[in-house]
Amino acid sequence: MRILLTIAWRNVRQQKVKTTIIGLIMAIGIMVLVVGNSFMDTAASGIERYYIKNYTGHLMITGQTKGNLTLFGFQDLTAMERPVPRIPDYGEIVEFAQSLPYVAAINPQVSATAVISRGDNTLGATQLFGIIPGQYQAMFPDNVEILEGRFWEPGQQGVLLNKAVAELLESQLGFTLRPGDKLLFTSVSTHTGMRIREVEITGLFRFKQSNVQLDMVSLMDVSNVRDLAGMVVGSADPAQLTSEERQFLGELDVESIFQSADSLFTEVIVEAPEAEDDFWLSLLEQAEGPEASLQEDAGAWQYLLVRLTDEKYLRQAERDFADFFAAKGIAAQTRNWRQGAGALAELSYGIKSVFNTIVFIIAVVAVIIIMNTLVISVTERMSEIGTMRAIGAQKSFVRRMIVLETMLLSGISGTLGVAAGGLVLLVLNKIGLKASNVFFEIIYGGPELRPELSWSAVVLSFVVIVAVGAVSSAYPTALVMRTSPLKAMESSR
View 1 (cartoon, one colour):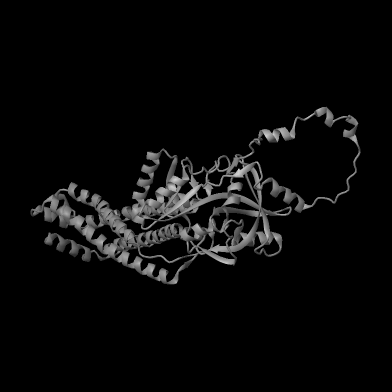
View 2: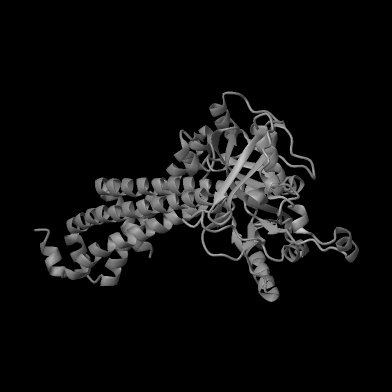
């Protein structure tokens, strides 16, 4: 082995031009691979970290359903055609979740999308998270920054309007929205029809870490969001009268009521002021208030978010909840944070897959270039190799010599590439990459990215370079093995 290593190192040093060409190709390829994968791993881990910490928790429990259900509702073509299912047996599930030692916190939510208007003007739209402020803040203590006003008090109603949404509305209104102002929220779907609620702004806020999707999310009391989501139950039951009440009312005598049909057509002139918007809004409030025939389903929730004490318990939690649902016959299921986060998180991972595909294509091109260079190098040394075989060197010895030479070159180039990639990442980490537009903000998982060296990217890079070296040396080695020693020796003449 020592002799092989000595010969391989001598050949690498002697073929300076070809060694430099092949080494540069490998080093640059490894540097791109390390920087690119570290870049994407940093972005992916950043997205995972801030979604779990600030918005989704580790797990999202929902009613059992098919389709792309996220924390923002269904994100597919069926979004308008079906409602987000309620969580069945919610109380039992909460009791079970709180009994698990690795569950740190839970938070129930309801979601709805609404168009915002004021008077006759349609101003924009927002995604609404229906929450209980105390539980939401206990689950996500660091994700909301109140800019004006406050959360609504227990038992009250209100909306905490996202500052980005408020700015959009203000550009249409021409004046600044303040706590105490009221807005109309309208939701429409083929399942629940049109539902309208007038809600007071209790405050303005922003998410400390956000993106274009989260910038459209406002927080509202769960009662109003349930109504906008169509989570209502019928309550118009017929009145049950006692015998005394029926006796007091007596029997209705229709003929005594209408003694003369002429009285039905008596001309009556009533002077009244014209009804204004406030009048119709008051009727709307009465029609949808506590006395309406459809009442809020106060025990209904669409999501139960679960945060664990440590991510290492994630698989165990999924198994425990699945076993509990099966044992109790509850039609519920768990979804991971990526499913809960929705399209932007999936898009970031999709971009990473595209990048890896591009790297694979580059690796294939590199293999072809390196292989051609090695073929030329081996061909020029054909007489030397033929002489070695003529004096007794076995085929296996020659094969190992060429492979070891290639692996040695690959190892040196790979190490230099990783070192160069680490240096580039160190500089980028110190500088920080600002998102210049929405597209980069999606990729970065926020307004800024500070990439760090990913050890998984380093390991992957060395695996790739070893594979490239092995594949690249295969054809030159086969070419040598097919050439007889005599012919190889004659090739030098």
